[in-house]
Length: 159
Image 1 (cartoon, helix red, strand yellow):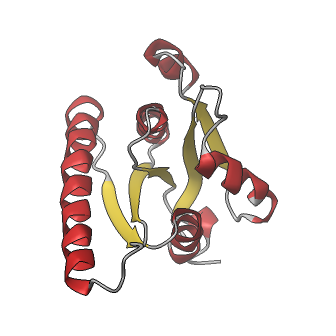
Image 2: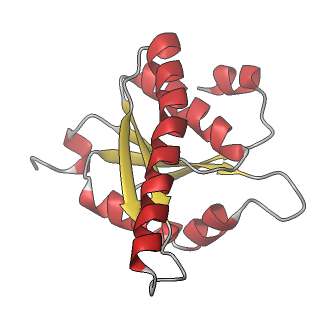
C-alpha cells in the first residue's frame, strides 16, 4: 500500500524538552538513523499557557518559547549533521505534550519509532514515558525507551 508506514524511510521521532534524559534519546535516535539509513524528527511541544486572558502576554511567551526551542534544536542539529551526517527535522506543536505527540505520530506516516528518554531518579521514568507506555498497545509504532543514565559508549554499542 503506497503511503503506508512500511513503505517510507523510517523516521525516529524524539522529543525535545529540558530533561536530562532527552540527551540520550537524541543520541540513540541519531545513531539508529545513521546505522539504518533512517531520519530523525525532533518534536518540541509548547504547553498551553495558564493565563489566556492576557493574550498579548501569552503570545510573547509563545514566541520566547519558540526561540528557546529553536536555539536548543540547533545545538542538537549541528551535532547530528557534523558528527553523524544526519539532517534532523524540527516540528513545533502547541498543546498538551502527550496529545501532541500522538497527533504527530498520526499526522506523519513516515514516523516508524518513538524514542523516549527515561529518567533514572526516584521520581520514576518521567511523565511522558509513564503516560505514553499506558497507550503503547494502541500506538501504530513501537516505543523505544532509552535509560537516561546509559553511557555514550553503551549507546554506541547497542545501536
